[in-house]
Image 1 (tube, one colour):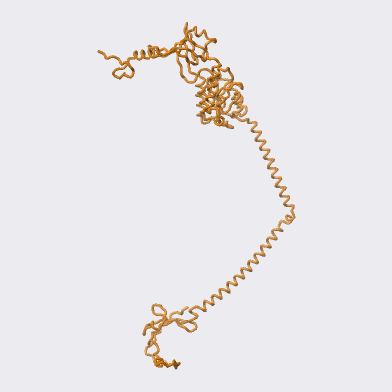
Image 2 (cartoon, one colour):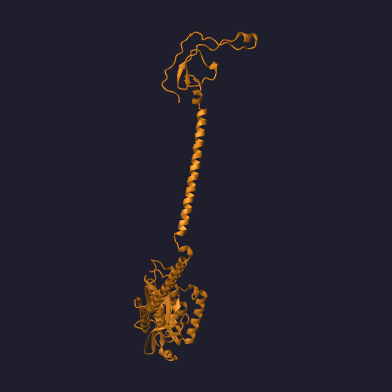
Length: 447
């Protein structure tokens, strides 16, 4: 015995799935419970068959569409004939065909969307985008002076393309174009223009993009007021020039573009500079520069003539001669002062040299004095420092020699011990030598 099928889609499992027929019936049952509704769109296909007309209703802003069947008597009741590209609003009931698994609308009434309604919707969109800052002047980018390559979005073999290209090349023959031919009216105009715009915006050499179309009826220009196209232009990194219609036509593309050309011809003139005018400007600038340089040279010549006409310039070397004499006088004076200072310095040096000589130990030795030193080089300053028999070094004016003391000094005077006043001692007779004084051979004289 088979188990019953789940009642709800959430109850289905891999072990208990719904057959296709059950799912189709469920969808059909759900769609049948929907009420009638009014829907708006653009007719892209229209195929009358007997008493029923089959058409495809497309959303004008995005690539979505639905199949619609409508009675021919409702179509014939329209005030204007129904054709492809018409904007309509219809009352329909959704139905689901279970055999083919398709959804379609069964229309009861169909009405054309009036121009007034379309303009009102465009005006509402215009206010919305303006409030967002899409049309703000500060976001518009400057048009390059001489672009490497010009991107052109236009209709296939259209007069607008010829107007832009011929007028641009007439002004600047070397201009290069990157052209994208697309539909500029009808159901695919919005998607094709947006795709071409994005392709040119990504091109590395395209520095400006022109979207051009000749004039037309208001309904034909409605794609250029489409929100998706307006936002695509606002998001482009490359400056965009709008050249749609004539002066009286102003779709929303004109407001969002970085520069609006009144006609495609005007766009061709704006996109590149006039070569003849630029050459004339260069020639004029060269002439002005030549005249300015000539005036400057003449002014400098006049200044030189005025300088040469002065009395001081009658003898150009007079000023140099005076300065040369002054320099010679200063050099002579400086030499005399330097010589005087040198003589003074020499005298001072001689005076100091004599003082040094007079105060030097050698001068003292020259007067008959001697310097007595111990063996270790210490100078004998006290008699008590000398021991009997110690080898001493005696330095005189011209050399030195060694001696050994034989006594510690002269005996004390008895009279001094008795307290008598000191008397002058008689010259003492040289005592016989008890110890021989040893003289060290002198090898050099002291300096």
